[in-house]
Length: 505
Image (cartoon, rainbow, N blue to C red; front, side):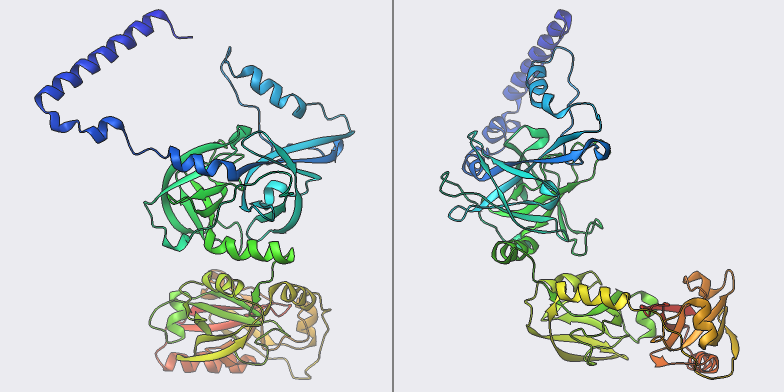
């Protein structure tokens, strides 16, 4: 309640401000233009045409009391001032969501947002985390009507889900995806969603940044916006000023759970392909190259004879994968895929995944300092993941090379023969070959790069090594060439490869 003295003070301040404005206007009318007097351009017409296509997603899940807990998508009871006129509204809304955990089954509810993209087929898009593990899904419209929804398909990698409702039960309004690539930092955007269960709420802001990687998945390339996005907005659309969906609101950064002006949306460029595949097949069908990759650092680029650090370094090849026949080799650097530049390591998984399964593509690589183009036919990522899991699950077997044990010390490492004793001691698989690192000196160049005992050196400067002597000879040759760093390809005990550079000065 605002006190009477405070009201009087506010009236006086308002009158003073009005008087000052009138005086200022009479002296310098150019400071108060008609446009400023009316405020910024209204987005009411745009919002009015879009509200009908944006829906609230309500889900319920039955859980045992002993396993119950607060659902991360569940909307918390807002903290309202005493005597707030909204108190009765929120009490009614939340009364069925509270209760003591008595060990029995209870229903956990959550709320999110979504939008209709196909009115004829009844296709609705939302976030996967909004409907994950739900027993029932209900779509609520801005006019108060409700329809049960069927789950068509989900994709955990991009956090997208596709639902289907009966298009005959209600006349639906749909929105379409726009071109998110055309959006620039500073462009105006509008978010519509269901924050805190309040229903069709419109907020406006700008695109604050692009290509954000927030480590939520392998294809992170988020649009960042300062349009207010809160809990319950997840799965809702981010519109451009033409009323096209250029993003799906997915995540926020906030210490309190409320908007602080840092929200993230999946760009339409990524979402469209995923949504189309889920709607058609009920699952994703992504392209797959069959490689393990790592970043190209400045040191690695220098070791490979590259002028700049760019691309994705091939650290390993999946057996049975699309490039297992030698088209691409460990140590190659992919700098272009199907005509699209690969500037950073994270660019490659995304462009490959967006390519059709079975498509033959040109891949530009740098191999031993020479740029060349190879032709690759893509496999399917979902099949490749099963193949990779099977490869990792192979039993480790010992193998005796019958060679006399020898050791050498170089760059802070003690190097030994990879014989049966070494394999047994470190649990190294039979298919791994090279010279084993048996010890690493503290504070050495090798220790700085995270090399540990049990790893196997398979290549140095893209030349194979298999004995301690070959390791020392190769390092000596690089020093004679005036090299400052040595590029080592290391294998883990299971055969997973990675590249490191070690200073030799």
